[in-house]
Length: 376
Image (cartoon, rainbow, N blue to C red; front, side, top):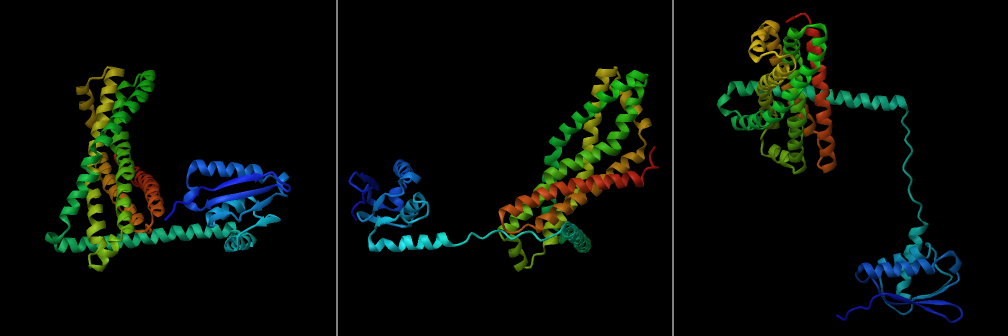
């Protein structure tokens, strides 16, 4: 097949002025960047409003496709020149471009929802999520009963793997944040307590705030951002790759093999992470108290059991179990709702993290109200 010549245009200075096009005006000949820039610049200079009376001679073009025709059509301002010489075989391209230009561009329909209707849509979506979470919790109860009846047939490998991912691999970040929070809280408290001569009460402040509130809450927020999003992403990818549909076809229940192991793993790992976060935060606060107030670590550890009642420790562990179950349920809920596309996967992961942290804070507030008279 002979190689086609590159597109070119020349100006004939005869009267009237005629623009003569030669070569192959096709996609592969116009794909060269330098050629395309040169042609586009020449067309832009020639097709100014002052040059409307130019004659265009396209009869010498060796080949023309829709890319070349579209390039000329855009340069002409989507109007056929008054003086145009064209081969009959190329007439159909310009006719189709003229027909397409006459089509009206569809406008997006105006939103007809009022503010009350929008509020109704939001509330319906909220109740839909609530019903989905309740159904997921009910299915979890059934799966736990099945697991209790036949423990040897349970998904022990899945539970172990999720314990490792959500528990052991989260030790580093929880330790770092715990130490830093303990140091910050100790520094701020020491500055105020020294003013009023209450240096000894720093043990009470650190013990109560960390063991009862900050330890479980910090661990839950970190796990929600780390493990909760991972749960949603894992289930969402399984939805995108149609693994969930394949499991349903093979008769493998989603709840028993995917949801229950993750919920049990977080319910076990969260109290352990709470203990780990408490220890690291108290260590950071103890070191800061030694530096700022001169309080020895031995005295700090001796006063800690007197300052913090044991019931606060159990309340913190109960919070850890509750937060772990809530984070796992929310992550699984949004993971199963992911549609088979990447955009839905990103939205589901983001919603999972935001809702998990919100529910954890709401649950912490409920704990504070229920146990307001306990442990003080």
